[in-house]
Image 1 (cartoon, rainbow, N blue to C red):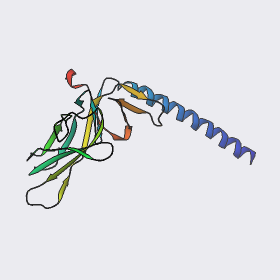
Image 2 (cartoon, rainbow, N blue to C red):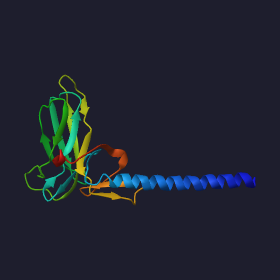
Image 3 (cartoon, one colour):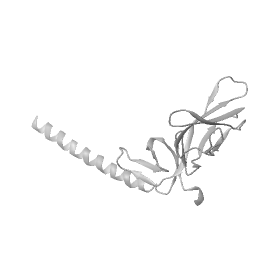
Image 4 (cartoon, rainbow, N blue to C red):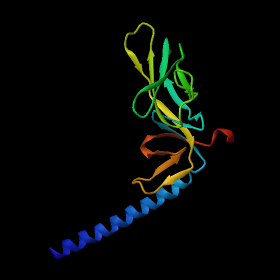
Amino acid sequence: QFSSLEQLTGINTRLDTLAASTRQHLGTTLLGLLGREVLWRGDRVRLDQGQASPLAYRLPEAVQTLTVTIRDAAGRAVRSVSLGAQDAGEHVFVFDGRATAGGRLPDGEYRAEIAATVAGSDQPLVVPTAMSAVVDGVDFTEDPPALLARGQKIPLEAVLLVRPPADDE
């Protein structure tokens, strides 16, 4: 029994060492993403000094109507923008930071919802959204660590794409 306990303790020690090494390697890899542009799943639009972060979305097919609704932290609709008909493919929406009445909204985080309809269908089309920004930090207090971009924490499991910043291409 003591021999089995000794072996289990040794295995436990080696697993702890392996886990620490993996965390260190992940941290080093994440630091390599600083200055890179990431695209991640999400529906948050950050308004900072009147400038909004872009919201990307992909339409699997052409739509007859597409409307973007912007909601504040309390969930109230503060703006609805009709974009009309759009073709299938990748699109980007940039919120102008204005409320329905036309006044400027305060800086902060807003949630975007996209509603679309396809010709000949009465079912709304589900349109997943994504955001992109340049990575400006890594939060090692999270487990696993999270990327930081434009004041937002980006969990690694939400990242869809990493590429050089648009101005480097």
